[in-house]
Amino acid sequence: MNIKPPINGQYLVLMAAFFYGLNPFFAQLLFKEGLGAEMVSLYRFILPAIFFAFFLRTPRKNWSEASRTLVLGIAGGISIFAYFHALATLPAATAILIYYSYPVFSVLIGWTVFSRVPSQNSLISAALVAIAASLTVRPEALPAGALLSIAACFLAPLVVATQVQYLSNPRRNLPTTNRMGWITIGHIIVLLPIVLWIGPTQVIPVSLIGLLSVLGIALLAAAIPQVLFMVGAPRSCADKNALVGSLELVVALLTGAILLGQNLDRLEITAMVLIVLALFIKQVGEKPSGERLVYN
Image: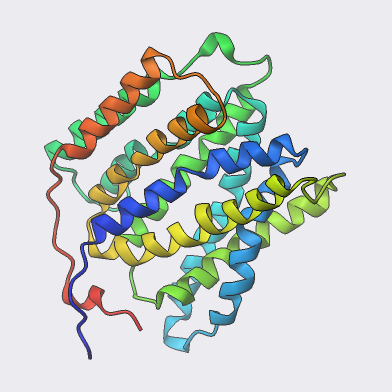
């Protein structure tokens, strides 16, 4: 068994959070191209799924872990469609804040489901993230009949929080490419039937910017950060992984303001400051074992 030199997983998760934060930017560009939430969701995963399908072969001893990863992928496919649907129908800031409240849900799920009692610092950091997210809520800006979209959007942070908790310490190790294969196939199992059922009138972007946005959401906002997270998460602890992920909200708001011309008001700037403060609160967790540092 070859033990590779330890890599600080928190830095890999931090890089993943930055790239994940680009999702709303690319999604909104594709919405402007006339694509619906179902096509944007499918484009996000179809290219990674095609690539990682070559790594689906799994030894019998790992079938149970592959099945659990597939279930995570199926849940992720449902939740990302709900999130992109909310992003297309609700004010962008509302959908973004709901999604990026997942660090709070992660601490709670880790505590209640995975029996990982959070430290005092973790609870303080999660509270700061919750306050930051709540500052960007605009109830008066919500369209009529938005309650269902809001409720469905909450599936996303719940699923992401569960993924963070499980993948930070999975029951059994899988090679990163193998796990990526199963989780992306899980996404496609859900999203492809949704697309066929809805029958969108437009399935291809109409401009070069749209085509580049498809590549951006598939590679920069999906494949690359997912690899970074799956490699980095087991090398860190769940609380750190969840709270570092709150950086996504900062990236999402800044890209919307700088690249899409969306206004950032005082409360949204305050929310970003609170998230940065939460990131600087030291999280103490168990060090990853040597076994977790080995990837085939």
